[in-house]
Image (cartoon, rainbow, N blue to C red; front, top):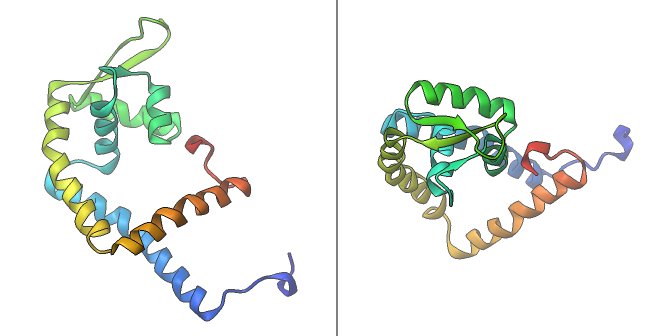
Length: 162
């Protein structure tokens, strides 16, 4: 695409883009700081513990967990090793596939996520939901899936998120 064909952003769109960009940089960092401050864990660890605690079965295959988190398996594998060393999760042989493993919560992991959840939910509620009125929430609920669909149509959506 040449410069002549580029559909440049209007001043208003440029301002909105800068705000979106700042949100994309600031929110994940703020979430990490909240989890570290209140629960001494990283957001990835919290995400794994939350998926395991909400699973309909007591353990999950790593592939199923990666799909639920929309992460690639390599990222998950490294994190699971660290979490196992901390005593938050356990790995055992998969009864249905002897080559694989099942990941489960330990008692320590369950207590950790139960302790962290109220603080984390309060952060999400106060930061995202309480700062928007009902119409703004509906607009966000409508807009975000459209943006994700656009990424997929362009072939730019992370394949581990499918």
